Length: 355
Image 1 (cartoon, rainbow, N blue to C red):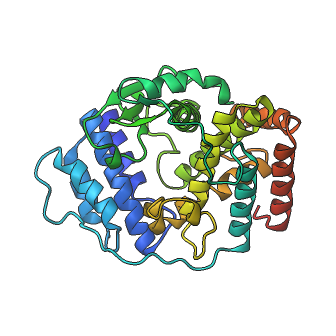
Image 2 (spheres, one colour; image 1 turned 90 degrees about the vertical axis):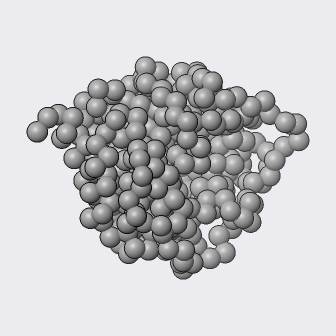
């Protein structure tokens, strides 16, 4: 088996290996297969493998959003087989959160309320922000410009940016490793304010790219699908929190505002009845996560788990963990709100330790 063939076989296996069951599993696998289709388009992967894996997977109960994205991306390689999933629209369950998860949501919302702009979810009267285009280089520029915000030792500046002519709404995980290309960040026609671009691309996605670079990228890395994805999303959220913590000490209000709105949006994704963050955002915000509760919680519980345990995890290389710990230690002494966040996280961990 060639190295290229082995890569695609491994990617297909990883795409269907998710820590979930039932409708959540079907939705997550369908979402992953759409990302596999995007990878194959960028790197001319074997579409027949995508068809085979899709046909062999039980995708009953998948959310129509994910099925539509999969069919759209598959259609770019030819006629979509009739047996591709179309999804099943069902009401996502919103039962009670565990005390541990509820506590994590509360900690993040309390921290968000301390960031520039007053109560979490409110906006400041600063006028319209200038938008920049990711497709015209704004995203890659943010990754380079905000490298100092990321504690990882690997630099993502040299990653490959690949434009694609698909709607931005058809993309989700747009960072990846590909055969003969190394680390790739796919970009569609996305426009954001410079401040949001700095945080969403420069900090969050930049952390993903740096995390990929900490592994051997000749093959698929262990953080692109399934359980590994949960870890890298937690790490990227910890980087966002760190950017806000340092911005509090430096008085950078725009950074605080961008992180604050992101924190509220991440908490609002969690599919639970009477979510306190949902009232602060548009009704459809985070709707896709209604069928992906495990992934939604990775953005909320995950960064606090890492902060409480000193970033010790088998999928976080030692030099990465050291970098995060050192920066958080310095940030803790920079502002009372950061000290409060760390104290609350330690108390939460002691109460709900799952080690």
